[in-house]
Length: 254
Image (cartoon, rainbow, N blue to C red; front, side):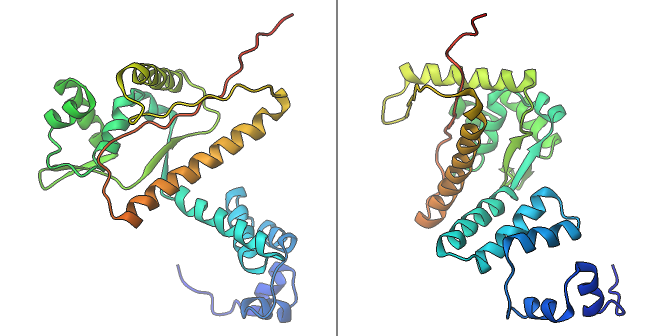
């Protein structure tokens, strides 16, 4: 795309509905932006909701009125950077890989393995060899893993599904994970697992806020685990499932 040499600072300021002098000072970092001004500019620039959030957090990280606001904005930007490496799997693709072992294979390939043969992968995950071969072929076809120099390679990405997509495939996946957790209670020692439950009274109108907080903490945990390997220079050598459940125990009485 070419650059329009006739599009001047004055023209840009006019389109942003600010004075040329103020725009010049903002661009030269002599003057900051308030959060409201940032939101207004985002609206004028027709940024998406996610782009607007990213832009306002960038502004807050530099021009926030308090140290606390700047620190919080920088944390949000770190999470945003992390989510950029997350690939959203649509419902059609997820329906093809709804069984737990597909995602386990993707993560296992990130471990320090001498061999990624179907036989080794099957042994590590307690799968049948033929089942593992079918999964590897499917994941390759969907471009979720690669095969290079005689080894299967996992893409350095995390995967997620669309929020609010309560399809039968996702229910199928979650039920499998819950069953794996149930078996782990009896098959694994406490040094291999961590299970904790909070039973608490809650007003139903607060549920959305609670689940948002859980999702935020899950993203932060994801980031922490990734950084931990980098800081301590230790490659992963096992695959875990860190699952969170929040559901109602009370029954509807009419």
